[in-house]
Length: 190
Figure (tube, helix red, strand yellow):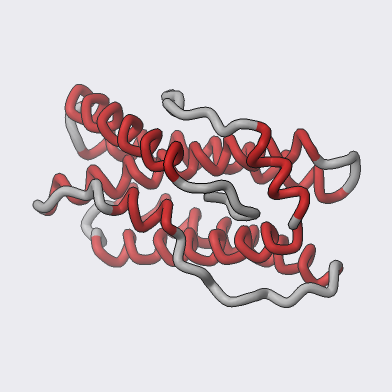
């Protein structure tokens, strides 16, 4: 449906694999936050029936992913860890515009771009992991993120003019690429 403007180099993946326990802790936190974001959206827009249904399903799916990552952590005898502030999320949220409709459009499109970045990076992790349960998990997670990426853009098309959505999505993709270029690589999703 759309392509990211910045492509994560393999160097990022090397850092993730070098500290995979920390990456898993960050991944768990990201799934938890994604579920919370979906719940927040359905609470803020109860009159948008398709959005409410989609966000209900998404919140549940993200919590299942959280539980799956938690299981991987437990198998490695690694604690859940404290949630850390995500500089990527903080910076991308700065693109939100004021105004009820503008803010909703931006929330949907930013969420789609975040999911696209998750798809890209989870795919890199899946590609780099040796055959086994963790690799299979990250292949499945990457596919799920791709589906979510499209879901958010489809919801934007449901509620807003397609041309306006496409124009705004392009602006957000350009901003997101700049953010990614300037954030140092760590053993974290973003």
